[in-house]
Length: 324
Ligand code: AVJ
Image: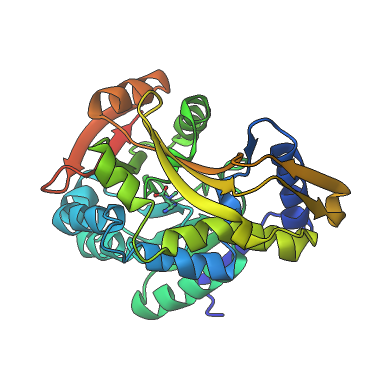
């Protein structure tokens, strides 16, 4: 590991096992049943997600990349950031557009990715160090939902939260999360760069979560595979249908797994047997879609001001800069 990389692992050894057990117990004994989307992303799930981002139906990743390509220079100039923090950085691939622009602008010194996966952070840090010889990478392994882990020094900081991951939170969770983000923007010039998928015709939205090749269906069912492996659960992946449903009131997509027939699933590690009725849904993800007016209000309620708003030419996706 080059000495320009530090990795601070803030998660206790048994964090993953404990939180998976807690989430599965709570979600599978609730009515309606649900599981949080973060459990999709084991090694296999991350490969499937990567394939999703290249599907013809899944436009968000391409749309966001288009916006970054078109406006990274402007974003770099506006932010003047010395530190780029990235929440949920994963493979840090779109990040390069920002790193290139911030490097060219001459302000950047540190890249501080935050992710739950130490393996993903280590790989990304290595690759970035090779390509950006003057960059220091200070990675933090943590769950940013519980701990934002912003580095103290190195302001002004640009906090990037891309990919519409904020959409995995329902409105109340978003309010709490944005308020915590706002409270963390303590250095002069700190700003938030947020990528959000926008409300559009329901057909386009549903297709993005129910592709012809069935990659999203496999991704959705992968959460059952994770429970089978890590909790010795006995889910039969063939017993469920993948569903993507648009909720016009909440303006979010829900991914669900629908039980084809009534059955029981044993989960020995939880000492639990789960009853599914015929046609019963297990909700595995919500993906909220946004509008400029309501985003402006949600930011304002958290003490943040919408300073800039960019979209792709078809207005499918937005990138915004917000400041205290
Ligand atoms: C990474 C959470 C933004 O909600 O679009 C893609 C995940 N789920 N297809 C999204 C996802 C199904 C994605 N986020």
